[in-house]
Image: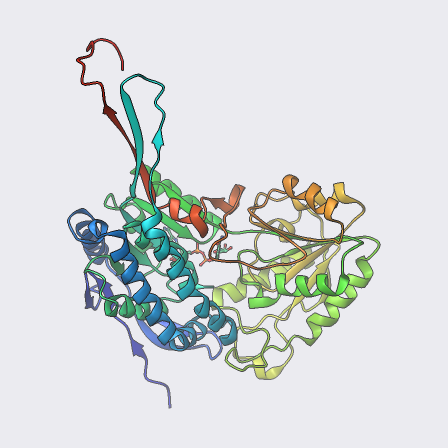
Length: 494
Ligand code: NAD
């Protein structure tokens, strides 16, 4: 008997309403079956959500509350997330197929992120500036940027939302969220907690849908700032649409990050780091260490050990505690990854391990891809240059530091890099020369709420997390005060 679908409404101006645009199905990538119905918001819904957020910002209490009062709401929200973390994690796994233990880990971290930004609320202040002029003092006055549009992705839906919503709310902004059409349910369930925490109507709104809803929102003149996570191709469109009405944007985009292993590295730790970099989350992380650069003297050993580890990775039901890799999130993504592996083959790459769906017949209904390593890849080949967003790593040997650096910097992206070495001087030499927003030394795929995170080049611009992440939702006024009381010559500039 097929399961009854759960139905979700959209959340606009403090009200739960069905969309006049109808519904879309949310599909569980492990079973391949739909499990929920999500609103497909119409243009009217988009207008209503922006109008609600606009009113809440322009004349509602939220930006006018004492910062401590705003912090109080955000702290209450953090408590509710803690209470419902298990349920939210289960929804995310249901939608994106990532391991339940990973989604639990992410959810467990979110209350801390909300609390961290809540505590920033009453620490936002400007500064007095020596004006260099007689009879004037001046100071800056940071204010919330206004109505924020948050567009998020499917691989970590509530994490991606939190690094936008937590600082935006703490700053005094109001928010309209459009989650990914593949994983909208957790954001809608999260909106229930916002409601329960007592946020004023219109401060937080959720509309759902695909690219056309995203486009309508981004182009909306009622939006003051766009915070986007997604692919580089979409990021370009989002930035252009926002720029058309001069709304600034923050873009957290794709990557093709290099994980570099030097001859003096702790090889055991490095192999673990390579596995975490490209096979964890089935490679569906923006920081995936998808280019594995290995010094030629340890190349054979590293490749052999990573291959051995990849062969032992347990694929299966993402909710089972022993599973190490779940399915990929949705059908087109599955097809895209397999297509990239074929492109690699036809461009002459050697498949060291994996290379397609796993042979295990039990996994045939799910959208699985076997952990894949490709060698003998030209650095200019498509699989070495384009983001695959799946468990597919390319291995390259290098002869020296200079070659490693040139390879690492040889794509248009600049999101992350890993350096595995025991030589501190080498690490320090490399860091300033690497074009990457986050660099790990003897680690990979570690992120924290207080450490800003962003990219270079086609990986986007702007930062999420930390004090810098809060700054993305503030604008500063400069205020001048005349102190002499004298009448000045009106034809002489200050
Ligand atoms: P995507 O760009 O297709 O979609 C992202 C979001 O944008 C979705 O909500 C989607 O509905 C919306 N969207 C699509 N077209 C739009 C348009 N024209 N206007 C406005 N919104 C639109 O990305 P995806 O394939 O779903 O996600 C994977 C990508 O996200 C990868 O490239 C990955 O690297 C990137 N990512 C980046 C980070 C980061 O922090 N840098 C984190 C996670 C994922």
